[in-house]
Length: 507
Image (cartoon, rainbow, N blue to C red):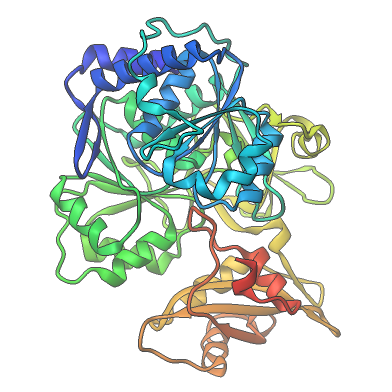
């Protein structure tokens, strides 16, 4: 099924209902349908066909969702790029994906001039006029493509490049069925209604926001408020001003809103969704107490479309857990060494996902695909366990496991304890070389403004709650921790810093 038919259905049922809202503009479902159909017609007239890949390098502005649904209506494949990428990073994705066109902002073109000399595809610009690029607005004036192009369930509709937290980004190929199943299953778990209005400041180029904002909430006929840049004070004001009922976030955003909120009421906020990384329990409790709302934690990698687990909005919610597997998929824990399934509740192993949301593979990388899709499931590289009720608890990345004298230390356990200190904003724990024990625990910490702590105070705090071998041996205080575009702490960068590289240089 072509995903554009989802939009057609909602536009028929709720034609005048707001689909997308920004601080200065609103698109109804009918307008979103009409503009995306016109764009599809315009792209077709330029020679772009079903199966072609088109790169989209835009912030959270209305042309982004219009372009996404226009491409899907045409049967083309969406390739998303972070507008903050450096020219060499853009060049890699354009070349690796084989994109035939790039849709981006006029102001971004100046930095990409050298890249575009060797690109060879069409360049379509939103906004400022550049003489070498086609104006986006002209495409919207073409005869619309009324009927979505036929798409088979196994046809790829999006190539989303992984964040590169463990290496160079790879293009994850997601099919029509992947995204259709995953978004439908999430709607049932979360319980979205047409009256809901989602606040989305997370970047739409990432699988998390792309699915939740443009598929999950759209399927329900809800509204989505798009914010292009996260500024805590502005976010708090817009949440109230535009009557947002759901907030989509990552742990870093919840922490920042807690720090910024002074006497702010968000009475209309029904619940929040947290993903991208495990949310510290202390942050969750403090946020819920301050704003009198619930945080529904979930998880999933890009390769799984990306939602794999969610805590139910109605039913048992387990704090510290990322929830239950979506209905229709299977999640198992395997021994990282033998790949044998672990059947004992609470036993830690690698998380493996099997189901309709598992991606088709990495573009142009058959060996990497075979490595993660072995034995009939996607090997996530995350360590965790399922409890007796089937709820998933994530304890670490497999590559971030710290071995201290042969004993396993899970970074999240140490980070949770550090977060309990009132002076700590964020903590990340990695393994450091130790000549005697192989590795030792090294903590990187961001403190609250106008506070100070010593390394010894942190270590003593940890010793109240953890065995000595789990406690940090070294502590480094940073003004802020290096993050990916979606707010995930880049532990790879921190580890490189331990080898003598500058963290600032690496970010």
